[in-house]
Length: 344
Ligand SMILES: Nc1ncnc2c1ncn2[C@@H]1O[C@H](COP(=O)(O)OP(=O)(O)O)[C@@H](O)[C@H]1O
Ligand SMILES: Cc1ncc(C[n+]2csc(CCOP(=O)(O)OP(=O)(O)O)c2C)c(N)n1
Ligand SMILES: [Mg+2]
Image 1 (cartoon, rainbow, N blue to C red):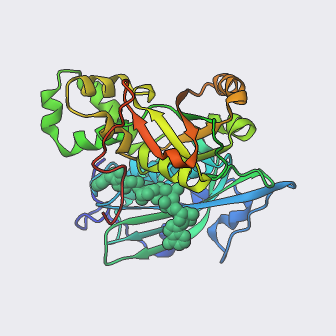
Image 2: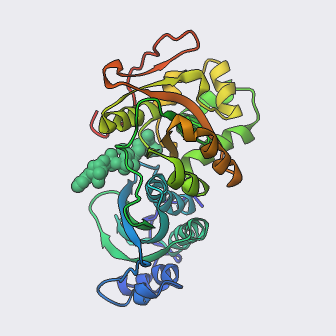
């Protein structure tokens, strides 16, 4: 279904109040999480196992900014949770629970709500966490969904952005640039028409945009071997620069080593995109991790064992060498912009 949540009043329009909305649509997402108190109290309680600590992160999705208003509501629900879980995964944290603040421009349709809840529910099952509470409002602005996610790590072991050391290898999970191409395809149908690959391949790229899959299976390998990590939301190059800056180091990426999916390779070969484009597009929701050279083989083995694909794409260098990405002939790639900025 691809309807706006606030379409004209009709038989499928929500015919109940805010309280019923919470009880009928949100409360089932809290089933199985005792500390949510069935969404009938002022607050939730989050129990943390002994010797672990809570890791907390928040990210919002706003219609027109992070997704198109007529997007499949199930995909909106999935993505709202996935982008938050992505931060937890990068910190080595196991997802536990989340809070959701949602603001609707109009009274939402029951059908839209049910599809949105189904998407969230599928994401909860995939990521292993529950809704613990939140807030539901009306807004004079566009639909907005803000999630705060809680995960756990052994106390003191959250993986920081700041731990990268000179000589470390730089890795990424999965493939880079797919979501960016998915967005380009959604915006420019002509791009699809110019491209002779089957539409099914385009669907792969669009699915990477609307249903990101943070790599939970990399958590054990990260915890054991990563010196630093972060998730890639704004673009590989921009996020790599941030990690290097926070760690007080430089870094060099081998652009041709960056893993691309077959459809991304096909579009690159057809001249529909460029490497700088793919390395700065954003919304990959993969993990960027640094691993000391001496632990690299063990890291790769641990990732393999948990069936997650990690690719060595560069090295950490001394601070005074700066941060760059080079092509196959060692020439620095030139970027128009290195990643997404909400105010650029
Ligand atoms: N409105 C805010 N209030 C407090 N901290 C913020 C705010 N916006 C961003 N931050 C902090 O700035 C840092 C970078 O945020 P951001 O770029 O959104 O991270 P990410 O890309 O991982 O989501 C994080 O530590 C985040 O908590
Ligand atoms: C309608 C629409 N326009 C533009 C984009 C592209 N886009 C929106 S936000 C973003 C970057 C990531 O979002 P952000 O809010 O910066 O996430 P964070 O870095 O805080 O995790 C990108 C590439 C999109 N997905 N949908
Ligand atoms: Mg961002």
